[in-house]
Length: 150
Image 1 (cartoon, helix red, strand yellow):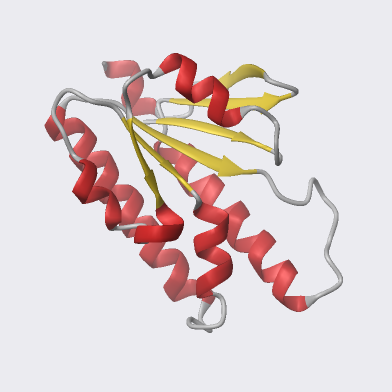
Image 2: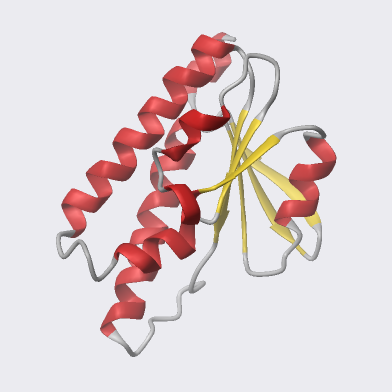
């Protein structure tokens, strides 16, 4: 799994499109974090985007942050297994929110926290994490120890 993270309009989508031409793009905001199953193919990389919009939409529906985080972790674990089984790359595009700034509104703080937890959980499972800023991508590190065995 590859993780591309950065702020709004940082160039994440362009970096992913250039590195993974012909990938199947799925918007989590339209299908939810489990909706990627529709885009599975053995040969084609799978790109999942729209996480922040989905999180913002479910904030009012799910009052329990722990339950929501467990749902996201389960989806990430399922993605990791599916990637291994099908042998094609999975790419997540996630927003970097806040950069240390705490929003005034409770809803905005909750969204920022959930997006941060999602990024941490995704990074823990990723073979590579890319930070994109000003259209430039920098590989942060090899986070997943299992990736060293590949």
